[in-house]
Image 1 (cartoon, rainbow, N blue to C red):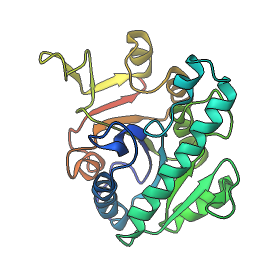
Image 2: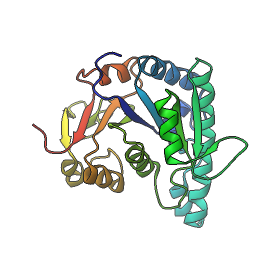
Image 3: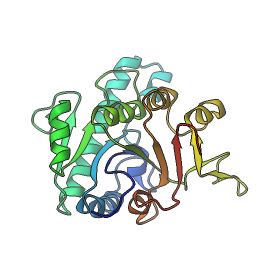
Length: 241
């Protein structure tokens, strides 16, 4: 295996990343692109797991703001993540990448139930494990799910995929003078209110020393470059050097 910076990672994808240029739904070309970025990393021996959101299909928080019961809305959002997980599984397996979908809400016909030790065993065998249905509980985001699952499987890092080249002091899509950070501490992220992950997820990572790498998933080869230690995106961790 190449000299990778991290040997076991959890990749966090937003549901919106799967919709491409559409307003909602799943874009098959995006799925194929993601699969082709993940495959060489897995083939090189990096152990990969994935948490994907469901915002391209249904956003529980948005529905709750319009009067739907929050818990009910969140459960619907969890089901949306299952749909995305199955779509991602299909794309990966079409390129010969062995996967398992493990759901926090049991759906025996389409996924395995989430069992921590079984998940770790799948990962050790080189399978990509896709964690679906969030934590199985309302009021928790898929960001928090990513932090929780990463800690449970003893991941070395969370790789947070975005549409920009890391974390900036303002939105680079509207401000051409926005400054990108190479490194940040967890406290920096919380104090500045930077949109890396939600505060619960950041606090969980901070309490357990789990680094977060934020990078642009839309640039071909960025996952591999980031893992090889090239200056790609922003890394969030404890006190910077």
